[in-house]
Image 1 (cartoon, helix red, strand yellow):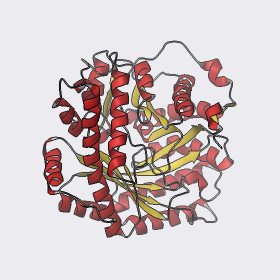
Image 2 (cartoon, helix red, strand yellow):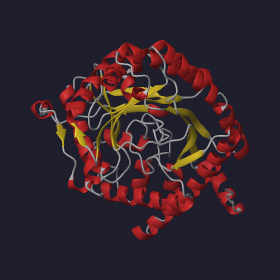
Image 3 (cartoon, helix red, strand yellow):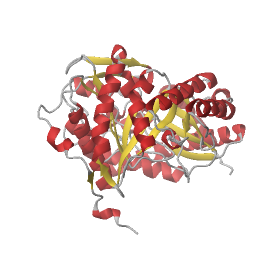
Image 4 (spheres, helix red, strand yellow):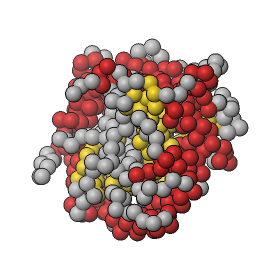
Length: 455
């Protein structure tokens, strides 16, 4: 496929890169590991390592080459793999910890920033292999640097597996404890999903779905600063005009993403998959989704009107991106991670944004409660109840929702956690003081909604 780029688009893109924080957030290489079976965990781990090194050995070099050719920053190079719970029929947590360490070793060998796919899909039930992998998650994440984990516990078709939801509260608490010397950073590498996509290039939720080819290149673009500056140029226009401004801006951002993705595909001789056109913020000044919403006219993100503003933004981004590429996928919308967005952090510190408002915002944007730091003494059942609420939003609205929550060991509301890099820092948010123990203890499965009956 040939993409024609007009010279004016090039000039506009250069400006976006130089002054508005436009970047390619990630080139993610998906790799199938379904052929990496063996007699024991050591044999499987060795096969996984060898395949990743063989398939991804040139990924970082190609990303650097494209960055030089096009002049667009490529922030991360990443790998996603087949959900590890599907590989090898292993049923002991220690087997999966060994594989996690092999994944981490491979990621470091090829030089990628993160590797996703230490994952299980348990929205309708749990096998012994999935049970073992989930039990291994805290130690696996605490003892590796680049491995990311995800567990899908709900879907519109299946409902919510409340037994898995209850277990994930326990797992998150254990992960926080095992990485307490680093502000419970293991929890920042773990996400719990409803309706998880199989082609998401963003961490921590990326994995290589079973419907994907042997290998594939997926691109994650980002440009909150570009959108913010575009909106600021129209301080008095109505919302219909603002929607058009965002659509046109998202179109340009997505075009750059597809161009980079197809270049990487050609250089690596790997099929091109999708462009995820999510507005993914960073802690850098001006690279904030919250500041886009404030440019709409809100005094501070989180005040009344924030959900409506976010709905407009998310919809316009999707419409603009889908016009620019026939291969939009992944999550593709606006992310609202607290620790990774300077505007969100400021809104929490100023008392404008709380966890209840973030939950409401989830209804109209991508993902959900993302990179939320909460007191370290938060109970496992409260964490599970927070997850259940987010899963319900995704299930009923037939959309992806997720929770990446960090109970910061030894810290309380008003303190902060510090991770650095793209993970940033976050103020610890206050939670409702009332418990949900009996609710979570019921277990079973919350049935799928009536809208699941679409066949």
